[in-house]
Amino acid sequence: MTLLSNLRVGIVGAGIMGRGHAEVLAAHPRAEITAVASRTREHAEELAERVGAAVYPDYQELLSSGTVDAVSITTPDHLHADVMVAAAEAGVHILVEKPFTTTVADADRALAAIRRAGVVAMCLFNHRWVPAYAQAKDQMPLLGEAVVGYARKNDTIHVPTEMISWADRTTCAWFLSSHDIDLVTWLFDDEVVEVFATARYGKLRAMGIDTPDAMQIQARFSRGATATFESAWIYPNTFPTMVDSYVTVVGEDGVVQLDRQRENIQLATDKGYTYPRNMLQRVVHGIPAGAYRDAIEHFVHCARTGSEPLITVESSRHVTAVLAAAHESARTGLPVKIVGKD
Image (tube, rainbow, N blue to C red; front, top):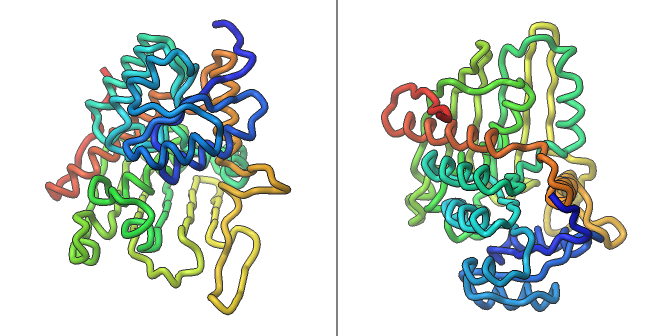
C-alpha cells in the first residue's frame, strides 16, 4: 500500500459522535475532513461549514465522489453495516463507532467485504487507550490466569431520553457493555463461549421508549473464567457523572480494580456537585486530548501506512456475537452459545 501523506476523511453521520470525530480529525496534522453526509441535512451543513468540507446527500454519493481515502462512520448503531460494506467496495478505509454492528449477519458481511477489499478498518473501542486500562493490560501477567471479572457501565437517564434519539433501536448493553466486553476479552486474552442474560423493562417503556432499563450478562470464557457485564441507563440526572464505570479482574495470583467514577477533579457550584470526565475526551490548551483522540490518531496512522489496527475487525465481530447471544438469552431465559466465524 502506498503511504498517504495526508488522509482525506469523510464523516458519515453528523450527530454528537460525528462532531466528536470531526473535532479530533480537524486537529490532526495528517488528516483532512473533505466530505460530510448525514440523514439530517442541517446537521451535515453545520458540521461541513465548521470544518470546511463538502456536503453530500448520502453516503453513497460521498463514497463515489473520489474525495475521500477513509470514512468515519458515526451513524446510529443499527445503520453501520451498509455503510461499511459500501466503503469497503469503494476501496475506502473505515473507522466505525462501537458497536461494530448489531447483528451477527451484518458483522459477517461487513467483515467479508473489508477483508475482500483489503482496506484498513477499525471499530472505535477507545477504552483500550485509557491509560489506566492500558496499564491494567500490562499488569495482567502478574495476576496469573483470569478467574472472574466484573464490568459496570451505567448512564444517567439523560442519555436515552435526550442525548440520542434512537434509544428504541438499541439497548443499554449495545450502547454501553460493548465497550466492556471488548475491554475484558482483551484483558483476559480470551473469548466468550456462552452467555446468560436478563433484561428489565419498566421506566423507559413507560416514557414511550421501548428499550430495557438495565441488562446483566453472565459470560463464560473458553479457558474457564467468568465475567459479569452490567449496563443501565436510568440513573437520575442528579448523579455527579453521566457515566458510572467500574471494572475489576480477579486472577489466580492477584486482582486489579479500575474505578472511573471520579476521574481526577470534583466540582461543586450552585448548580450541583459533579465529577467532570477527562480520560476519554478533553481539550488541553485548545487541543483535543484523551483516549478518544489517541484511538482516532491510531486509526489515521494505520490508514495512512496500511498497518493492522490494534483492534481487529474479527475481535469487534466477536463483541457483536456476544451481545447478540445475550439478547437472545434475555428473550428466551436460556443460556446461549456464541456463534463463531466460519
